[in-house]
Image (cartoon, rainbow, N blue to C red; front, side, top):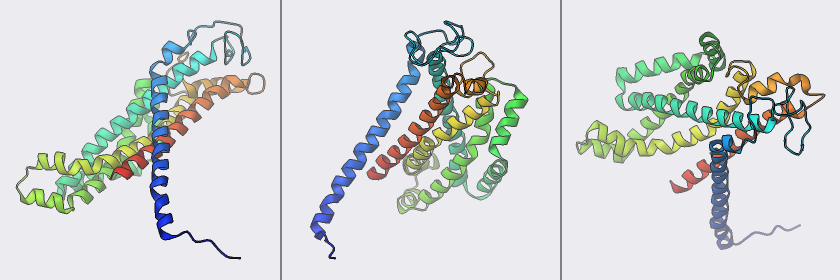
Length: 286
């Protein structure tokens, strides 16, 4: 049995096509992320009913004429509660990642550029936070502060920044060692301008890709805290809380707890796929 070997020229010719296909797929995933964000923005406008007040008979099935996803145990519209919960979960995840990236990025840049005792001090503090089980610390903080969206975001932000601090510090140390940064330093460029003009452009792509891939993890953790009753107090619409509150309906009205869970799954999946797309796009430009 003989094997067919493509000529070298034909094999090389397929590379641009693969790159174009990869870029198209990446742009499609990023567009999906943008569409999800737009859906979260207009979720309250799309919701057909008040998510808190009962609007129909309890446990209406899927596909009901005026309630596409049915109603829950007390007659609230499942679609409206899911849309409100999707908006809360999505923007909460974006807020936690943004705060973690800003705080951790600032610590990482200061440690990487400062070096010496500044680097040692900031990294020992970072290691202290990393040594703690982040999920348990977040649960403890939220439980101590009391249930509520603000306390949940605060508790998660406190444990989320050290990962970015470590990542950004490593990238900064790598960029600082490159010839163009050393040449700028020898030319007398000030430290602030050196960081803004020569260091940060090399760090931002990695930080952005990591943050985009991290959104899905934050969505899952937020849903987990809400599932445990550490999110917004009832009757606020939250995906994890709605799943937990209706687990007893799994055998009689399965769609009531399953629909919010599926929404969490879609949020996490889209975030992870879009993160891969962003990584592909930034990787092809560098």
